[in-house]
Length: 202
Image (cartoon, rainbow, N blue to C red):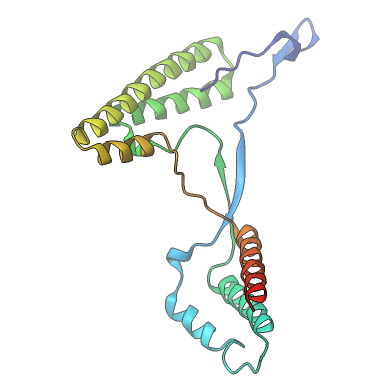
């Protein structure tokens, strides 16, 4: 959560009769690429895979076939599940599932007040935005606290369940998601590791 109060250095004044204030900066966003694998046409994917060069290939070298496999799978995926680019805001945790309906509505009201203040820049809208931020913060913190309390109460008496709940709440074991380039790099490192290991054993 942030509040924007334009400093004096950002005030634009061209004449005594004309003055203005720069609008608040836009929210920080980040872009990412993904494939819509859940929506892929499985029959079309299987058909394209069977018609690829993987079947009937006369490659006798394992490395060459691995390169061919990687190229053909990437080509078939590009046809049936092309890469897409999305954008998301860099703000807060994605914890809507732990929020109450009241907290979700408070967040929506805060967002509406923020958009209105960005559009008008009026002091009254700034005060309304600030009040909405405070109300949303209180509602969100209360909702999170209730959610944590409920989880710990459900695990009360079971040491293992309490430990798992604590680990989950502390996010100490977050799932790591790799993009295509990172996966390719990991595959290369794994391959080199096991090839070197086999060579040392032999």
